[in-house]
Length: 297
Image (cartoon, rainbow, N blue to C red; front, top):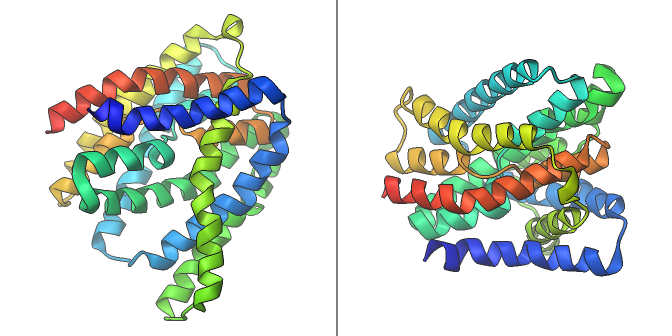
């Protein structure tokens, strides 16, 4: 049931983008720029403008940062074991440290845990998008251009400023006029489906003859097995809502984030490998997520 009602519709959107790219062979970089600089920024702003700051949100931030740090360490150790150079390590980091908590994770949470779980999932998704806007951009841009360029790229991400502005407006209780909010909301609604279509389009460019099975195997194990296990252990350290714990663990088990494939295109950080990681982990996750949800229920 989970596959038919939740996972399959998501895969069909990916397939739509895949077929479109196969037919028209479009240039993905301007489309990815649209998604990053406008659509995702509107989504981040809208979510933080509506989300109330509370203790559970604080736990979400702390647990997410601890999980990211643990995944970064594991990935760095793996890269050293494989004797990867800086660019290879950065590409592997994009594939392992960031999960698809948005366009894949949130609908699964909605189906499995209802509206209460979905509310948590949206908050987690937005904070994950912030982490990707900072750390994801850093890893995507550092391999070829050095740390200075990577840091500059972080400050060029409008979504990071959107978070600050949204929180300020909320805390100061400044109400956005309805017509303007509707315009923001309209753009924000387009973010997730467009990113999903872009991923499908990028997957159409993946050559199955050139897959790096060593790196893909490592990425799959870290993303789909180590990540949810680490999330569970970290959650035990905090007095959080049991439902929030389940949501955090399930989202930690999501495949590689679709957004990282966009960053890989944007900064030319081995997009073939990163997109392949998204494809492979997405396919494998159909089984691993079904197993995990059965265990948690």
